View 1 (cartoon, rainbow, N blue to C red):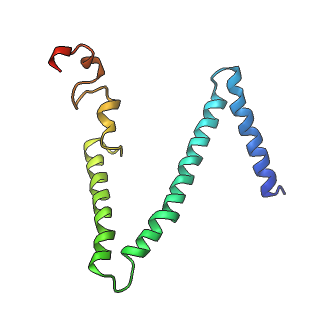
View 2: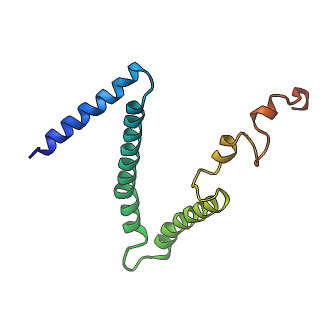
Length: 127
């Protein structure tokens, strides 16, 4: 039976080889390694935010027995604003949660104003 250290060693060795396979050109192994690294980084950051920020914040504001109105307001206001932003994002972007300013920039300006293609033909004297 392999120990946890051996599994980690072989996994890191294989991922290193997959990243070095980029020297042969962009290929499936390299892309798979990039996706694995991105997924692990996203999962790790979510766990750190959950355990290091959200849970202590909830325990200090909303879950305090005999909490004052100031503590409840401090805990409920950001939570309510975040939920409203998430609901707005889901309703306007078809279920994809994005930051509020990122939508028009990624779409090239369609549906949210003039994009860079239209702005390069703009009259500089009008500015």
